Image (tube, rainbow, N blue to C red; front, side):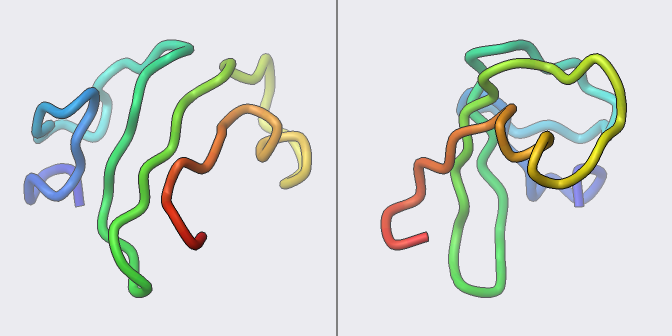
Length: 64
């Protein structure tokens, strides 16, 4: 998706899946139910379970 230019980071189109993100960044991407917008709240220290990952971002999409 990133290589095809479908992901936006802080409003700018990214074309690299390894683009760095920081707390406070906004990520916009297509989803089957519409466009999703999320704000990164923190970066996890490790890969963990879904509930832990969900605490690292805030959904900003209306109706999501």
